[in-house]
Length: 206
Image (cartoon, rainbow, N blue to C red; front, side):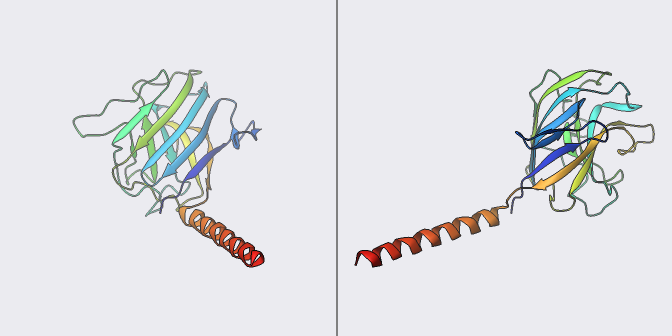
């Protein structure tokens, strides 16, 4: 059963509620229209990176379970590579690393926590602007969208190779949309009501 979730960026400083798109956005970097299924993800990202830069990995964005050591976590395996990935903005995603087959978008390593990452070709500079859509798909299930209600977003990491000590971009809440089973139930109820109305009308006509 495929559950679709939308990540809404919640900042710790300046809040701006955009009711038209049902998101809470940050003045610097906003992540919008984020959908995550067991084997795909997509989101829009736009804005300006902070002036404070991470010590390392400034070309990488991490989305981490608040309980980063949870196992099993929302990421269903270590370094599950996407089979397709793209970014529509001016920056480009990192090419596939042939020596180990690492793709630019993948789940993280179990030794570092429960997360996925998006890797770009070049390091983001302080106050650099970004505007585009990230998309990726997997040939197998890579995520369990029911494990956690939120994720923490980070830019880069420190020299300790930890995915939770980069520059914080905010906490994202996973807001479940109606699941497939609920949609089928609603459709079945609608058909039953329509059928009852049809029978009632036929009886009156008789």
